[in-house]
Image (cartoon, rainbow over all chains, first blue to last red; front, side):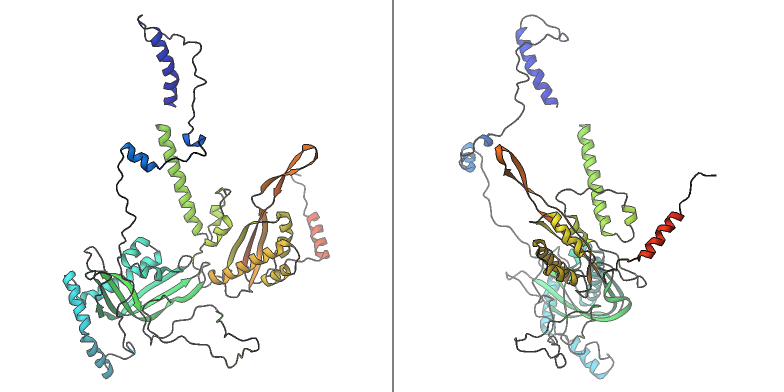
Length: 318
Length: 209
């Protein structure tokens, strides 16, 4: 608005001052402008030069720029990626059979405990390596810390706090935890811990380059939890809110040891091969039947539903 | 300067309102009465019907009756007339999904084939994504057609006259709800007569002595 006003009157002012050069003129007297001043024919639009030239192909603007004297920095077509977590669980811990079934006071239980106290040499080496990089690490305090990380991560998952969840859980674990949760409501409560959490396994693999160390520590947890998952319409899909369940879990916690600002984050879970089957979903699901040739008939009476193989799961990706 | 500042604040206000509205859409439940006074405009390119599938209800208490699942599905820019599509949409309103698919399969109209595909897609979506237990336990609650974006062409008449020809397109919308299809109320002629007489008897003269 303001610029256009000056433009209209600027032309007038130039003309008036030029006509009255020698005579003194008071500032407040307005002299009428000349008759043929082109004001209404003034161009007030802007057409970029490219509109009129359709067929003309311009030369490289880069060459023009260089000729004009503009110097461009060398453009790198690469982008640095920071890998803050490893791709999986290295050398996973194989939990002994009947871990939480046998009472600790019986003969077998005592044997198991003595075996577990003398951890394998590789774990001891790994713990020593971790202590080199993180001086405050100790197996006694770390187990409780791991349990706290677990509880906070799951609370962040329920209230779905993305930033907090990313700081408590590694990038590899995050999609596993959050897949399919978008239109569901999850209610989870940590009741109590039945046994004190314990560090059972540790490894220090290095990725890509030799010195790039990641510390992975497996923690065994036996606790009581309630889980209830509701679908989009608020109907219960899995579990129940009142009935708590005893849960024995092997959590893998990881940290990028080289990075001084890294934190211990939940990396994954180990599901042993002897784990009892999970509770069924509150829904009837159709299991695909066997592949039949055109002349065959389906024998419903003698058909056995194939059971999944009893394998240890270190990651949920099929 | 002042004008620029005012518009800036206004834009921020509008953005805040839009943000709060969006968050409110998530939690509907019993709060629909509060939102009925708000008029949110629907622009040309907003796909409102598809967004209805993102509504998440809060968990139900165990005493409450089980809420039936609702699945919204649509197909846009079908090369067919909306008026011709309306006849088929009206036909399957209120039918169970199996019945609707059967009727459309043996219907000779062009729109019937497309509608059948849409219904099958919606059924699959319901079972896979929306936790519907039995794929036959669905019925068509709402089904209607709408006008799509037409292409305009010239139709040449005699004597140098022309008309603008529309290449018609339509949208088709369907909402499937879990459960048994509701039976339409059928009243006998005697009942209707009784209601008519009762209506006549209920008449009064207002402001009378």
